[in-house]
Figure 1 (cartoon, rainbow, N blue to C red):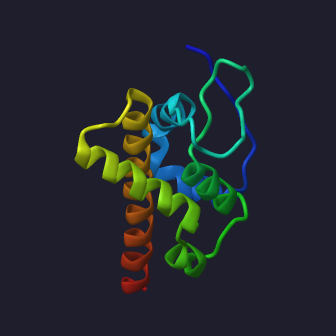
Figure 2 (cartoon, helix red, strand yellow):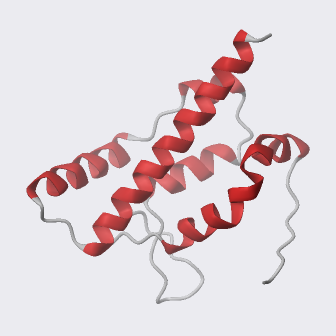
Length: 128
């Protein structure tokens, strides 16, 4: 297994600590998610899928080193919300493609992660 070393702020390291054991899995899911209708950020090789808009938005948001208040107020853009709505409609109709199923799964995981982050912030604020 390869080892990857990156430099991140101490604050981000603290925030990622609860996810330490899951980081390889989460990174793998991030690069394996495909979406034909997502933002135009292509990964390093041409045959790699694109990253869904909501993932890009959350990543862009997190690299700004948001405050706890920023995290609690965070919502994805109307564009990402509309894409999720479209995927949910297609799911109800049973007409999702394999890549759309993967994209919808990514949205669910991302939403779960954001809910957990917000819940931890609220819990930490209540314990202060």
